[in-house]
Structure formats: C-alpha cells, structure tokens
Length: 360
Image (cartoon, rainbow, N blue to C red; front, side):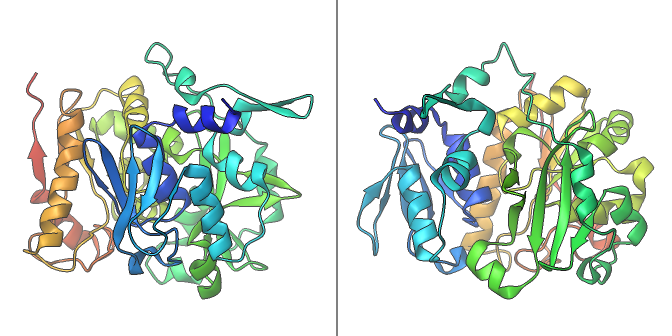
C-alpha cells in the first residue's frame, strides 16, 4: 500500500467534511449513514452553482460524480481536479499533502515520504493535540491597517487591534492570525477582497511567506479561544459561529469582558473541537450559531438546515446541553451570520433558539 493510500484510508468522515468544506470551499453537504453528498466542485468553480451530486462513499473512501465527470477518484484526485479547473499550478507536497494532513506528520526519509496515520494522533486517550507553532513576529510584515470593509460592518479599530487583525495592501487581503488556547500562533488566514481571488481561489486561504505556508487544521482549534476563554469560563456557555468576523462583531455587542463566542471556521462542529471545550471549561450550554443556509421559512431548504443543526446537537447531547439558532421569522438573509443584522436581531434569534437538552 502506498503512503497516499495510507493517508486516504486514515481519514475519517469528519475530516473529509472539514477538508471539502473548509479547504476546497464546498458551501454545504448532506451526510447519510454510508455516504456524504457534496456539491460538484470537481467541475464547478463556484460551489453555489453546483448540484449535490458528488458522493463520498465511506467504505471505499472514494468520491463519485454523478453528473459531468461521471468518474470516481480519491481525495487526492479531487484536489487535482480543483487546481486543474482553475488553471492553478500546484506543488503536490505544499498544495495537496500539506493541506490534507498536519505537515508535522510527514517527514522525508531518503527522499521518500513516511506517514503516521492521523487517527493514531486522535486516540481518545490522548486529546492533547499540539499544532505546530510559529513566531509571532512573522506578522510584522503586515502593517497595522484595518480593512474598510469590516469598518463598514461596524467592527471598530479597537476590536480589530485586540484580535490582531492586519491588512495586506499588496494583496488586498485581511490578515487573520489564529492562536491556540495558550496564545501560541498556530496559523494565519487571509480573507480575500478581490473578486478575482474569491472566484478563483475562494474567500479564505492560508498565507505564504518566503515559501513557508502558515496553515493549520481548522478542525483542531476554535478561533478566539485564547482571548475569550475567561468570559466562557464565567458564563459557562459558549456561542459557536462559523467565521472569525462574527466573533469580532459579537465583541462589539458585548465587549471583550463578555465575549463568550468562538468560531469553528467552517459549517461543521466536530468531536475534537468538543473535546477542546470540555477539557478546558465547565459548560452548561453550547449554542450553535451558524450562517443561515435558506432564503426563507418555511421551505424545504429551511427544513434541511433544521435537520442538519439538530443532527449536530443530537450527536453530542450526552456531553452537554446544546441549542441552535433557527430563523423562523425571516430576520436574516441567506448566508447571513446571526450577528450580521445587529445586536437587537441577534438577541431575538438567540431567545428563540432551539434547545436540545442533555438527558443524563
């Protein structure tokens, strides 16, 4: 068996979802017992234009496209199609292997790869997963400028400074440092503002400085945990948003002393992130506050969103009380975060949230 087969076989369904949604930009998915359905990003640049016809089969670890491609391929093949579709030159190690596994799991021995399966690192007896850390002074190449796009959305310079936000005028990108709970720099993401970059490469990507990628597995951390851990401990509940910007907006509503929010940086919440919370906090409630994925209520799409959120909560309800925001009054637009329409709207949404009680 080749090292690629070893990697492919080690990936869990949760890791596949994380890779396809957070790295390759699929905007949604549906999970069944034996397979996961994704948009056909294998031949659509914009995930929003794609149909849910790309199936990932859990038993054989292969994707199959039931529309234009009509072909089967593994996770490496999906990456190759992703780059080819966008006419992007890529390096296998940095642009594929590096993004699928923690780079510290891959070493070179006599010009060959030696791989340690990810599942060995994630055993229940060892939840203390240590991500690579980077010197904080790498951020000094970016000026302390704050993007007008976020200022227009009522995020203050003080909040952006507090979270270490910077700006790259050369690339027209927002620079977002990510830290672990102890304040170690574990990765840096760039939020693209140019339409061309968004269309061809996606909104978010890790930064690269002098041939070094400053990326990390988003599913192994929660954005804002280094700064908001005290407020979470006092409040005994945490609000989980999808994106970093929502954590900053929440900070504007309630101040840093009361900011008990974090971002999962995707549209899924996994067992590793749950373990991170339960290890460090005594929580009475975990609130899922993900982006709205339907245009109006009631519709088939709103029902699917409800089922998706309920599935997350039911999966983990024996660990903690869960709830989720579900907009039944059409206060938000599709793709809005619950905080995008202001504090008053957010408070209406959180008051009406769906509660899933712990039965233990």
